[in-house]
Image (cartoon, rainbow, N blue to C red; front, side, top):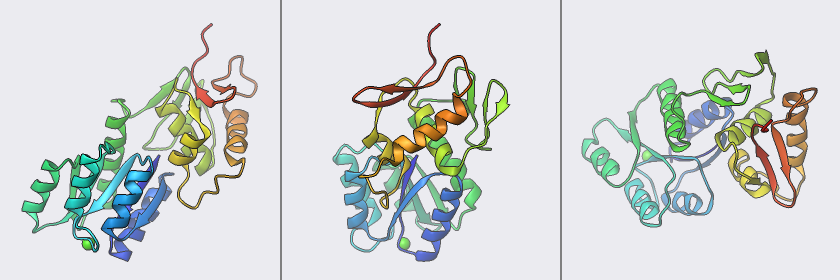
Length: 225
Ligand code: CA
């Protein structure tokens, strides 16, 4: 899952970035409202964390322009404690949630998980496809009760595929949601990671869950008997 942080305070931005990356999210950061608006309009982010006091364009205007431009990405706004008025305006302008600074990073992570959960229509917090289970809080992955150890990137790819189980995912979709702006789209990295995942998830099993869709991409789904 890919997250955009729009925050002009470098310390706060890098603190949030590090915490999100530890949770296996792909993260982009920008420090200016205009750049934030443009990135959020161009890239299919799964969540945007938006500070309200920003150079270039105030967060509230970023929010309004995104919503009027039909960007439906969940948005979590960051406000100072004194900005009650801004918070209300933010929620009315289409923000999904807010946090007041200073905040506990655990709370930000929990709110991020809740927003991602809501967006993917899943309510339990646990992702399950057939006998494959992924827990976004502990990052534990099991298949048939057996623990599977994944690298951060393998985990991120699997989480994205499980949140979109049954859908055909193109390489472009996968690269947009699992990698950040540093990603070189002209490599075969996605195919390589799919192979790694298959080795860990499907190898030696009677039915595979990761399927190649010829000419399109990949899909993760339970095979009908
Ligand atoms: Ca600020």
